[in-house]
Image 1 (tube, one colour):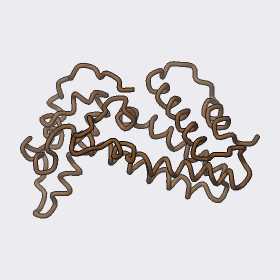
Image 2 (cartoon, one colour):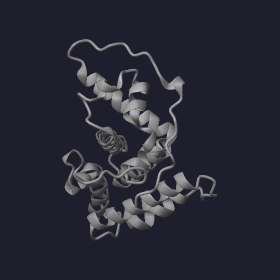
Image 3 (cartoon, one colour):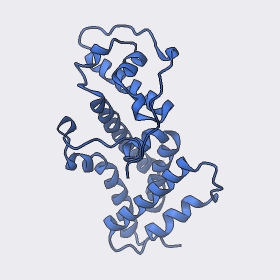
Length: 220
């Protein structure tokens, strides 16, 4: 469900920086810097309306027209931020699996904890990724419903595979890894979201385990 952002706020002048001009052939670097600037503004404000072409240009230290060779409008920049964050999430989840070793249960827990860590470290980016702060209109930049679903597909596959490995090892009573991984993701998303919007709530110390263990149907 899309949430309504607060009214747009002015970008403080102190965010302006002097940027060193890229050498010829480094246009990709400027594109990345534009995305970095938009993500930083989002982190600071929690309001997608603050992310405008002008504010992004000011933060990146460039003139507004310099954005157009890379992005036609603000929705295109926001979509680029979301795509990059999903790519980053996929890399972090894959790294968590690798570092967890050969224990399927440990790998599954590592995936879940890494997902929750992203939400805790970058709550505004997380809410943007999952439709809380910003949801692109279908048709923007030729975006289709399939494109939206596919944004998080690789990360979801890692979760499904981690739970499937637990099934194969007899560590869970799940009889449908895909369905139960979906239920687990919904639980993780709910916890991540509520931690962001209700940080002062007295969350139990073991709330993560209370969400993960039953939804993954892990054996005691």
